[in-house]
Length: 375
Image (cartoon, rainbow, N blue to C red; front, side):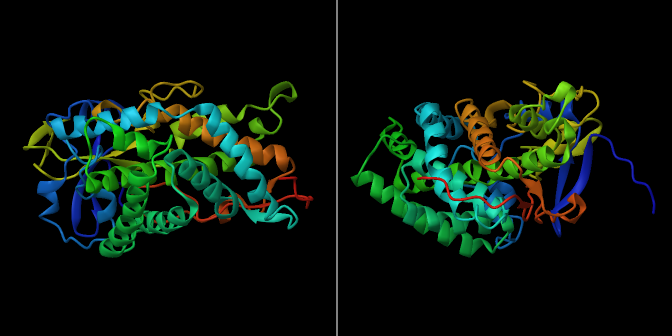
């Protein structure tokens, strides 16, 4: 096999026949993500040059929301999100995890085995997130199906129809029945978003608020179940769940490749000319392991790109929520089923396909059967 050596910028195809550039050096990624004037996130011009029905399109196409716009339009949507997310009460998140986790665990605790992704992490994260958004379960179930289809690359038209109809139902509901929730706060912001704009902000929130946390939980549990540092550790004191989460964010982030930008004009970066309006994708997984930045010390590291950086970074108000959610979901499971163990050798685990996420298809575990907990 011929060895191929690349510098910080690697030519790739984000889909067969769709060229892009993958950034694998940390400092180069930070430079690009911090320069939205030259590297805007709006894909409108590029989108006209590729087939509209490629399965990854729902993940990357233009939407009037904070992740796919630039300039004043982006600032407007970003202010709405910041305002809505700032109202999240972290104490209520912990309460929501505790109250939702028990009935979920009770569905499989007698069996002695489970797939903790599909049977525990996904329904629990989704339940908590819907409570934060003010989304009732019946609408949430419709959104869940559409969101999974989006990440797995189901055709664009089907995904957008499923997602749009479900989220418009939520918007209609909250217009008439406001509450103390993220959706209502977005509606009440002085920007006065239209129903269509509301739907597209909610697409972003569901895409960011469910799949990545579930992936992070799965990847972190895998580390904790297979690495003795998290079961025994020095002097019999295992490392904490928070330590495992911080390490996974740096070494195996739930979104491996994303943060896509589109240069306004040809631009020279690291000796390479990047074409105008062609996708530049940041490999958070590669950049986080760049030896120039990765010291092997992960707790409270402020450098990992799992939450991105620059104008389009994950809002600061959302980061404590995401970390607390993942930590509480994992801790509740391990407290309830302390003898939890991986059911298969790690090499037999299957990773889901897709160019963007780092996600297990399943995480099968075994444990001594236990009686249901009181609800």
